[in-house]
Image (cartoon, rainbow, N blue to C red; front, top):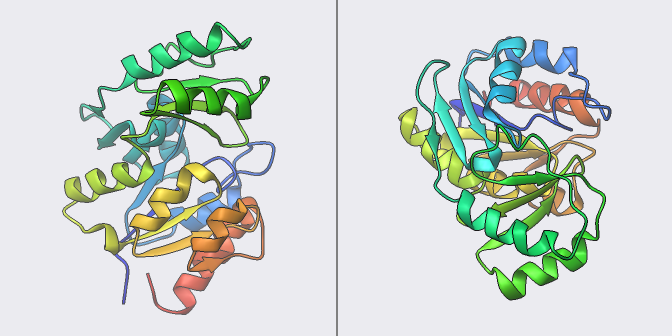
Length: 226
């Protein structure tokens, strides 16, 4: 089977550990003859800049599936879930010292600096806000609705692109990529990925970060999968 599109995470997947863009990974993505979807936990403006700079503009899943846009100048589809995240944050911030990140641009979730007891905060959320979860992407802490994730984002993107989710190859590195990899037709975890992601992936690269993405695409091309 030949896959018709590729959906890929950004931080830790096409970047180095210090979040600098891997130029090798960017060049490899830019060389593909199939559409590339950027799927990130970051905000839409960041994701648009990444897509433009990499040269794969502009199919974007931002805020872990909360914001979706299929075209640079099109109106984004925004999930109406921020209110429940705000309520959960107000509850947790009365107990923990929390610092919001880029809150001006966030539309569907709340992102926090990694400087508080995430495990205890997660337990408190489970008891008091069962529809909201905390995920740690190793770059930041996200308070997000359980209704949305990169998997639901891929479902909507596939609809917009007139494809099936089984038509996509998905590449990622973190827990917030789990549903996306499960939804895609073929899943890849780069070498630095979380153990849980590697366990469900169809292919795990030996190389880490952006080099892992280059290796993965070489693998796909060598087997005529894309």
